[in-house]
Image (cartoon, rainbow, N blue to C red):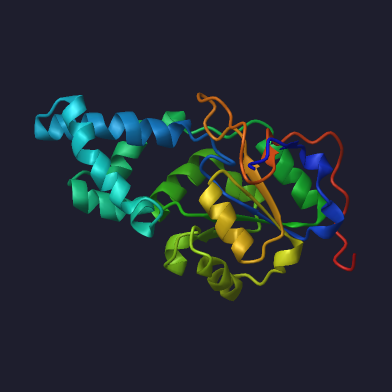
Length: 234
């Protein structure tokens, strides 16, 4: 049965964790921006371009979105720019004021750095979206590396992604923590041997939080105490 267990970051076995992989959209950043863009803003712009009602635009877009879900094309802004004949990056800029960092994320990233652990952003986001969000949030200042799935030619939902990642960034799966809002990605990482896995309970702050998942649920990024120092020999 899916778990309802809510986990605090303080409860993790930090002495056994050396590397922390962090998703971006829905994990470090509020998924409201992306949900609003794909469900509201883009359909309205598509409707205006083609002289459609909003309902007609959504009806045309829905099967296109469904056909690419879970593939790299779904995350590829170049793909959608070609397919929809719209400048997707420019449209995202129109609502960029909605990009927001989840509460306590900067403090958590700073605590990771002080503890000596490696903090790596591992995202399916296309370079155009990634650049926009990092420019507005400056989260990369707190990270040791940023890995874009488009450079590895596979989405994180595919277990082989994690093997390819080893070619870019050597890590011990048994000493790695992944925090992600996408349950399919967590399942993929689990299949690839990553031991410590957390699902974000509330990816979109405007939506009700999850109550069940196959992984421990992380309610927020608050820390009640400093993280213990990393000890690779532990």
